[in-house]
Image 1 (cartoon, helix red, strand yellow):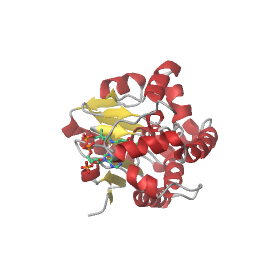
Image 2 (cartoon, helix red, strand yellow; image 1 turned 180 degrees about the horizontal axis):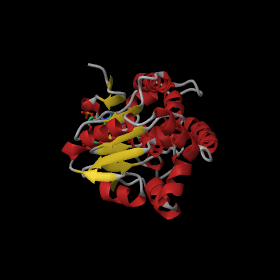
Image 3 (cartoon, rainbow, N blue to C red; image 1 turned 90 degrees about the vertical axis):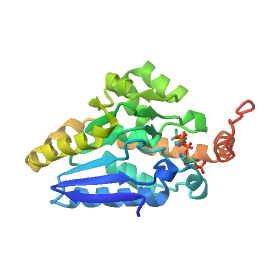
Image 4 (cartoon, rainbow, N blue to C red; image 1 turned 180 degrees about the vertical axis):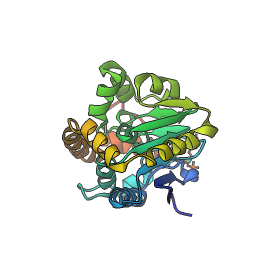
Length: 254
Ligand code: COA
């Protein structure tokens, strides 16, 4: 079975993270599948809405750390950057249903979704600093804008998880429901949107995003340059090695 399931029905293209044994962490191959699926969904008139979902217990543990070490992202043609561009520029409604951990890009992709529904077990985190890295996917711009500066600083500098109710309070999610209902709620909302005139949805989304899209893309590029440089530096090497060796990282000399 594929690590990313792509299923289109009644105008809704659903992208399901399906790698439970690795907590739905995302490899370069998975980013490529996601980017291809989003690009195809954007171009296909039969697709009117796209939805990201995981399972009732996990959304995504973010980048697959082992794969990341073996396949360091290159330039803007790298699968991860193709994926970031595809979700940030997706012209049609983009939804997510999030249960359990949503780590790193598992949280930052939500800044690019139009509607987000969370199970009450959702735990969002952006632990980039703890990995010796910097914010990515536009989160250094979009988290302060959405949360307010100090709450964004708490999320991005401390990198500790925040739960569904806190995500609701800062406006990252629309509604919190029991985990067993989150995917169904996102699907129901997606079907409602799919029944509306597509041209009106696309134009309204374009107008809402008009003031920020170029700035967001520029920030994704700038973050990407720093992120790639920092991946090769000692702090990230220590963090990733510690993760693989199942020990706490030692940043005392870094
Ligand atoms: N990359 C690679 N492997 C990962 C992973 C990741 N991001 N996240 C989890 N896994 C692996 C674990 O190493 C473990 O492998 P093992 O069975 O060989 O020991 C397996 O998936 C299950 O994970 P585990 O940590 O035991 O599950 P958990 O329910 O206790 O915790 C998380 C879930 C998501 C909170 C935890 O796995 C985690 O913090 N992962 C790292 C997240 C991260 O830092 N992502 C990078 C962001 S840039």
